Image (tube, rainbow, N blue to C red):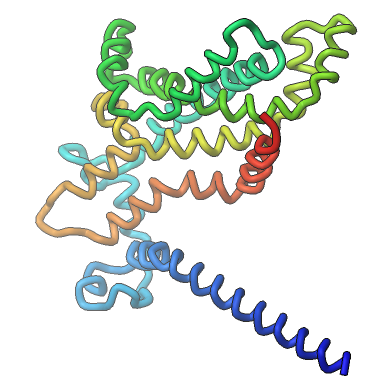
Length: 293
């Protein structure tokens, strides 16, 4: 009798697992379907796209659309492809991510372990900054960039994203650093270590997971931003998101869906790579700062 019960329980567990895995596979296929369509369309010829089905596998795969999207596709009146705008985005994203993350790290360190009169007010103000819509800061930012002679430049876009991202990075780092025991910091103070010594020798070596969270968050937000790019980026400083919009909406008599799909994948590829390489640190860093504070 007990063996029959155990056998029945085992069968129920097996059926439950099969059902769960089947559901997960179906959901994964559902979410991967658009990516499949984009990839297959990008290597199809225009004739197959016109005559075939959206889900058809490419009969004669070609990378001509990728080459055109990268180097010769028209984005408005310019036909230089996405290449120059891709490097504009790289030049904008890398310094903005690094600087905003470093400043957020120092701010979080101060708010977590070097409390000062009014630190709660400062922290609350930074939290409010996380919820300010992009549209609210457009006019103040435009005036600031104009006064600094940084309008329509890549440097100006870097400044905009650093300012807007500090609130988020500070919040992430502060919630992470409150998990570091105060006794550890106080012991270093008693031993004569100062502000930067404690940060360099104790806090910074523990910060890899939360730095990866900020890198991924900031990289994704900045790389995918369109509003700041189209408002503050000049003709020679526009990021790839603006160029992609211009490419898709540029009419030459024939809509080249394969070129559009290839361009969209090129624009999205860096963020996909970042998540694939460092995605495990993202979850680890977020959960590490979710227990205390």
